[in-house]
Length: 306
Image (cartoon, rainbow, N blue to C red):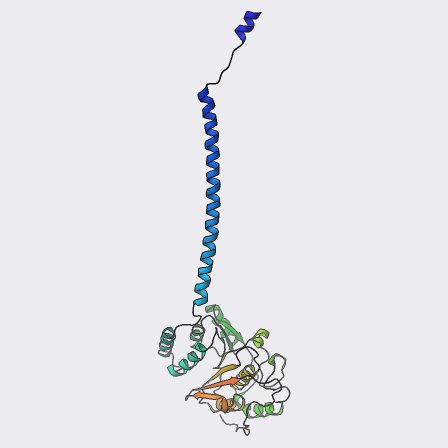
């Protein structure tokens, strides 16, 4: 029995080398885990610092960047636009006057343009980083331009005026200058015959820095003429309440008598700072909300000729 027990019993001994190897493996595993942990923490810290540094650098670059096009780029754009094959384009001088006004903005300009013309893309480009809005009488053409050039913001408006009615319309404004046709008001709620009250609501809240009247059509008696566009520009300029009290208003085709007469009535000769054969440049100040007169000097009712 004893012999069987002694024969069946086996003593299992672990060699010291095996014990040493297991302990060493654990140490190496612990060291590896520690190394990876430290590496992860270092990477995380470095990445966060790198992101912060990069963000600060980009912010500094953006803050230092000039939001406007350089003068040389503006001149190049105007040069090529004025030398296009389109016979209806503006002259270089007229384009440059508008470009100079846009460059006077201390921040990106709000530019309102009545009329979609061959220069529309030029105005959008010159008003770099600013907001440029176009108003046109032809809804189909406005939709076509927006589809072809998605960066263009254009709206259509229905004019209820006729060129042949200029005299009567101006007289009607004078009769209502203390009520519906005030020089300072929100035209959205106006029933003035020359006020455009069907523009998108948000456009009446924009502080326009530059307004260009280059539409609608006005070359025959039944055409809508630019009386409503000029009157609306005059009211928008005088009604602004932002930090910049002045608005540049340009009237193209200033050689047309209707445009000159309407400009005299609502933009006013005392505000005319520069003119060429085809362009009138006015600078208007905002007015007190109680103002009941567009100009310091009044004019007699115009003749009905154009």
